[in-house]
Image 1 (cartoon, rainbow, N blue to C red):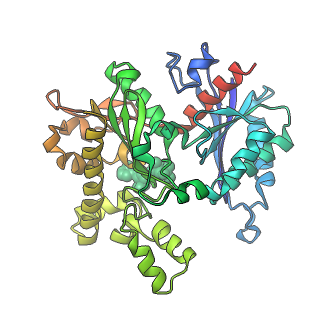
Image 2 (cartoon, rainbow, N blue to C red):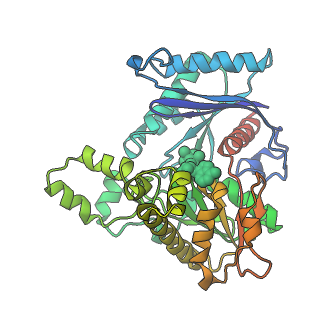
Image 3 (cartoon, helix red, strand yellow):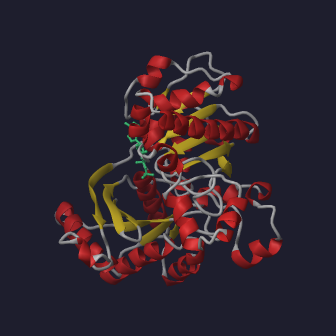
Length: 400
Ligand code: ADP
């Protein structure tokens, strides 16, 4: 099937046109990637990024709105399709709230339901809805599927998703932990279980998705039982420009110093993390500076690897003993130095890295621990577009 995957942000749309195999057991496949046994991830036909939406002043590359961005994407996609017909569009939707625990076929009611979640993800869901509406206007008959970043974490037990705050905050505003990066964690969990030859339903692991945004997930018997991001993607690990966990009283303190909500939001989401500690949000540069002896870079690596190691230790307990620790996303897949730092803090868990395997570059899922490591350490490349395309194909087939 030919699936267009759209990741529609407020000022950019990322897209990928993919050919995926028709799932032979769509109902099972819709539960998660590869669960129908197929290992054929299909192929990418074309893809790209349209940026600077709504910023006419930005120059000739900019477009005025999502509809115009989509026109540009449609041109590129039509050319690549070369006369073939598109089967469906799969949308990455950031927030599925408490309602959505699996991918769904989009209709007007679903679009409105996603829109009602806008207050929970004000930067993301409105843009996702714009993308959905732009496709509906352009190709009204084309099936569209929403794949939610929060859905995989709908299995968290209440004791993991509750904040210890008055219930009225949950009832009136939906303030609870939701978790994000679910599409990636789910995809990687399937791949890791397969690599180790373990049934997904019996697989316990800790997955570290380390990109510009970063989160850890605790996987018990194949499902998510805890994750480090919470009400928003700010909670948890030290990230490129996000602080992760801090004492919430700091916000109150800053408000009393006269900072307003937008300023605090910017401070913690855009000016913190590696950027604040090392003066740079790119892990490659931070590692290089640290190797050259820059104190701030060394400290940034220490703070971020220490925080991550604490989460891994905690989640090892949460899942009743992990069989695997899995690294994924830009940093997790590529930075052997960061993996080494984190693993070095985990010797109490009996984790031992195979130094050669850890340093080796590869695009394949692989084991990087020694044979006598108590917990297998894996690197598994994530592919959110593939996961979204496969989930979309499965939903479309099962709805026919
Ligand atoms: P996102 O999808 O969240 O924007 P990515 O998964 O692409 O992010 O990860 C981006 C991060 O990965 C950046 O911090 C970047 O420095 C890091 N990264 C990418 N390639 C390498 C590499 N070869 N070595 C170290 N870090 C890398």
